Length: 398
Image (cartoon, rainbow, N blue to C red; front, side, top):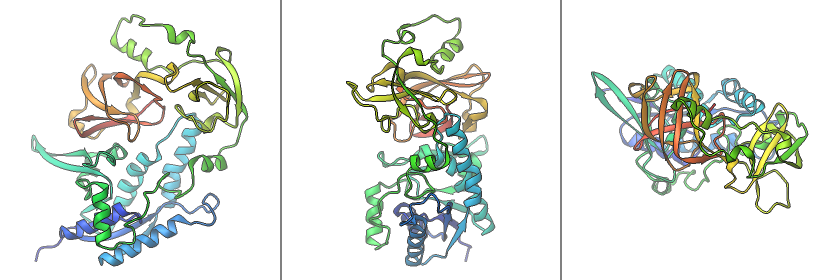
């Protein structure tokens, strides 16, 4: 009898990974369930609920029900170094990190993968809503990362930093299913996770909200909230002319240069590094006709710049830049060379509908120019670009 392929599935204690494990077993793999414990600093979890214990317990019950071996691995040290420390550094420098994208690149498909190899695995699998296909090109196998079939749940964006080597060893068993179908399977199998709510928030702190978590770590610093009028002079310049496309793109993607004197002080805040572009909640400033949105933060001067209403010109930009260091091609064979362009669909955050855009490769990196201006392009977040439903590259917005 031939040896079955061994696959290690990351059981998170949620319904998606539970059903992923079941499907792999049905497909004839030898399946082992592994729960990753990423966090156990009790000073920041809400005292009366210890989510990772509940989750690991649920994962164990699922493994038991499916009749697969199960173990827990503690990755909290790697997690702290690679994810938590990075997050604080990013927030302190006034950027908006995406810990979930990083968690996949650094933890689930790196540290976790290495553990899987030590256990003799051929593949690792997760409960992500995305698909993988492969084809041959000039004698090489090329792996494609495709959006999940369920438009509401497509999670390809979170995997936008994966490499060909990581994709080669990955399986996404539920990518062909919709969320209701996944819940349906779990209900029929009577899995304890069948009706469990989707986890919100960071992939490690369980039920702690990010602002609360940040506030415990970053020192409060009082500063002013400034409202910039939509008539601000810089918005009025229609189309200046440029000697080259690259100069035009540099102009379109530039960071605004506001001063306190450009608007009026409308309130106080406890630290600019707690706020992100496009944010509306948590400003606690009343008395404006339309709600205020954060249009920029200055962490050095500790000032938050805001504008009224979600159509405020300060929220919109039609281009962004990604430096060479932060540029990643899932499809290395499609990578652009200097001077080349490509028409793509792109998004600047999870769950944003895909938008028409053009990539421009320059010496120092890559510009993305959108057909329609985009609201709240936040530095530190990931932009990802697609050809049809295939994610081919991504990068950190600079």
